Image 1 (spheres, rainbow, N blue to C red):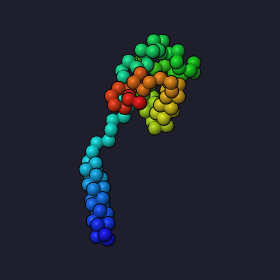
Image 2 (tube, helix red, strand yellow):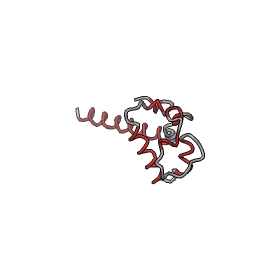
Image 3 (cartoon, one colour):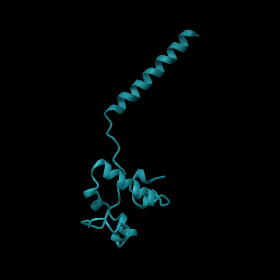
Image 4 (cartoon, helix red, strand yellow):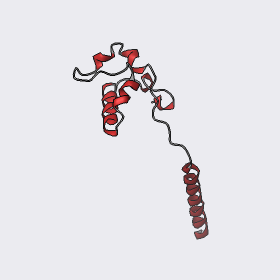
Amino acid sequence: MKKIVILISVLIAVFLIGIVVANEGAAAPAANPIKEESCSRCHPKFKSVLQDSHPPIPGNDYKACKECHSSEENKKRLIDKVHERHNKSKCSSCHTGEEAKP
């Protein structure tokens, strides 16, 4: 009985090590891709969703926002605000791919 427990323990350890080794070279999943037209589709007057004090942006989509919101602090603030204000929307309204599935 003791040998069976040891054998099962060794098999589990080998299995877990195999999973770690197999995933070691795997690429990290891409960030949740944003649909190109995602913002302007629902907000045709894009300026209306920005605060009056917000500086002008060089476009009418999320990509234009990322121009300035690229530092970690600014990116987090942008992502938090967008998700906070759209928390009742489906992920697929803005995102594409597997990440858009709830």
